[in-house]
Image 1 (cartoon, rainbow, N blue to C red):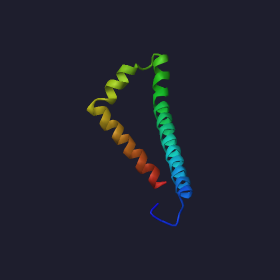
Image 2 (cartoon, rainbow, N blue to C red):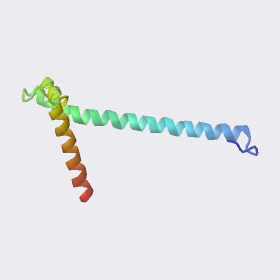
Image 3 (cartoon, one colour):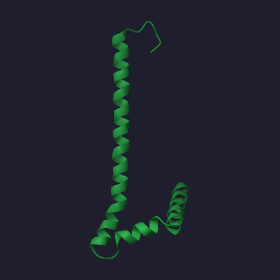
Length: 85
C-alpha cells in the first residue's frame, strides 16, 4: 500500500481482494462453530426426546466443577490419544 508506483485502482483491487478473503474466513469460522455446537447438542436433544436424559440434568452436570473437570479430562485424553496415532 505504501508503494507509490502502484496506482489507486490496483490498490483498491488489493484491498477488495483482502476484504473478500476476510469475509470468507469469518464465514468459515462461523459455519464451523455452528456445526460444532449442533453436533454436540443433537445427541443430547435426541436423548431428551427418548426420556433417557433431561437437558437440565446435562446442563447442571456440565456447569458444575465435576462436569468441567470431566469434560477437560476427556478432551485431554482424546487429544493425546489422537496425537499418538
